[in-house]
Structure formats: C-alpha cells, structure tokens
Length: 381
Ligand SMILES: C[S@@+](CC[C@H](N)C(=O)[O-])C[C@H]1O[C@@H](n2cnc3c(N)ncnc32)[C@H](O)[C@@H]1O
Image (cartoon, rainbow, N blue to C red; front, side, top):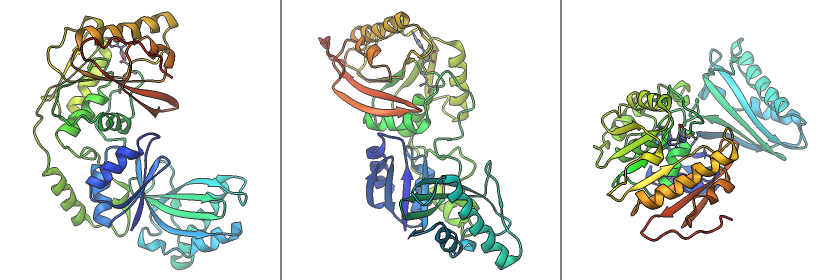
C-alpha cells in the first residue's frame, strides 16, 4: 500500500530517516511530503511514532479526468463502505490546480455529492458533512487532469501531541521542534538546554526523543480508528511493541525563560507529558545564566522581533552571541530565527545553515561550534 506523509518545508530528509527506522519501504521525498509503502501495521505504527509528519494520507483512488462530471462519476465508483457508512460524518479538504475547476471548493462539493449519492442509492440515507470533528477526513488533490482521493489516517494533525495545554508567546509547532532536534543529531546522550524555552516545546520533544517515547502516546484518537476496517487488536499490539522501547533519560535536559508566565506554562506542559522528573526549568534572564562547565547542546528559538523595537532586538542577539562565546565553550549551539539582520549580531560563524518554515516565517536554523577562540565574524548570506 502507498502512503503520503505530509510535513513542513525543510523536514523532508529527517522524515525520510524516521520512516526508514519505522520500517517503511520504497521511500521517496517530495516537496513537503514523503511517499512510502507499507501495510496497515506500518500505517498505525507511523501514526503512533512519527515525530516530523503532520499527517499521513492513504490514497484510495488515483485517476485522470477530462471533465467535472467525471470527478462525480468516478468518485461514485469508489467502494466507500470499506471505510465509512451512512452514519459516518465526513469532511473534504481539496487542493486543486486545474483548468477544469475555477474553485477548489467546487471540486470538493462534486466529490461530496458523489459520496452522498453513493450511500443514498445503496441505503436510502446519506452521511452528513462535519467540518469540525468528522469521523472520516477525505483529501482531494487535483493537478491538471490527475486526481488523487485519499483518506487522512491521522485525523487531527500529528503535531497536536496532546500534552500542550498552556501556551507561551509564539510557541513552536511540535513537529518542527522535533525536526530541529533530529536535524541537529542530538540523540539524548549529551546535555541539552533551551534558555528561551517559552512553553517548553523543544525540551519536551527532546525528552520524548531521548526516552524513545512515541510522539503519539498522549493522543486520544487517530483518524484511522473511525474507519470501517479499523483493526483495534492490531493497533493495541503496535502500541505495546512501541511502548516497550521506552528507556530512562541518560542525560540532563534543562531550560529557562525570562518570563515567569512562560516558565509556569512550560511546567504545566512538562507535567502533562509526565516529564517532571526529567526536565529542569528556571526563571532567569539568559544574560545571567551561570557559565556551563560541561559540553552539550544549546538550542534557542529567540524572539524574532515582531513585537520588539530594533535596538532591543539588536542588543538581545548581541547578548546571545556574547553569552554563547563566553559561557558555553565546548557546546554546539543551534538558533532558529526569521530575522537575518538580527542573526548577524550573534557575531559567530555558523558551520551549518538550514531553511525551515515556522508558521508563515521563513527561518534560518544555524549551527555554531563553540570551541575556544571561535569569535570569527561572518556575514549570514
Ligand atoms: C519565540 S519564544 C520561544 C517559544 C518556545 N520555543 C515555545 O515553543 O514555546 C521566545 C522566548 O524567549 C523568551 N526571552 C526573551 N528574552 C529573553 C532573555 N533575555 N532571557 C531568557 N528568555 C528570554 C521570551 O520570554 C519567550 O518565551
């Protein structure tokens, strides 16, 4: 069976690695997506464990059309009762780039009519649409005359892990935070700190990675659990097998923030994830943090300046650079920011640069090796 895991721009490679480790076959990276093959067990396992996918689609029909009417007639020929019945609620998300349709909404309505008529003709009743909390999420993709109808096996997007209830300023998407950690090659063997931790996303995702806790462990449901062919016993087996791999934390994960509200929120989220014995949090300005004696990794997602005046932002980034140089010698630092001008104030030469999308903001994700004497200033292109 073929599946499509959707992801954020820049995370295709780490997602490919994750899928390989989860036993997927014939993996091909695409733009913001990775295509792979496997069986139903693979689908359940990927949904339960994957950290960097937003959703996993299962294509159920791929075909070509010459007219709008053909979308209706072929849509009506899909054996829908394999996945739903007339009592199921459903929603359709459509992405359409085709001269056959002026509006993607119209293509979605056409497919909706074909599903409604399919069940009405067979049973006398039709399933109803529910866009907020549907039993079955259908994805319609039309590019020119090529149509793919898929089921979204995840339902609620997978970055909604279920542990985050308290929000700080500009929280990171959980899948993005996990992707940053996997890109950094942090594997839980060396200490990790986030001195601007906000709601604690990087710290929590780090602890989940280090302890091998499946990313879906805190979720109540997945989309495939509402499908007619859902195999509950198989999913229970998958969860047991994956949970059996959970290990104790072998290193120190710590964070801090200048805002006491952020620290409170981070603590709530850490507790929700059952990680209160694994992560230490402090309420402190980064400029006052003590010099670290051990080597490790420091990952920072500082404010991008959308709400700060330019002078304050420059001094904040200058302080970050100076603090890294003087108090974190021997560390590897990673910084995510959309503000290229402010990043120049760090005053260190990055050894790696990646581009990631944080919401609508295109960000640089920069690596700095903080060995002694690394004060070389370089322009960030
Ligand atoms: C973009 S947010 C981080 C969001 C976080 N990654 C999350 O997922 O919730 C930036 C954080 O930096 C904190 N901050 C700003 N200046 C700071 C400073 N000088 N020292 C420590 N924290 C600071 C802010 O309070 C805010 O929580």
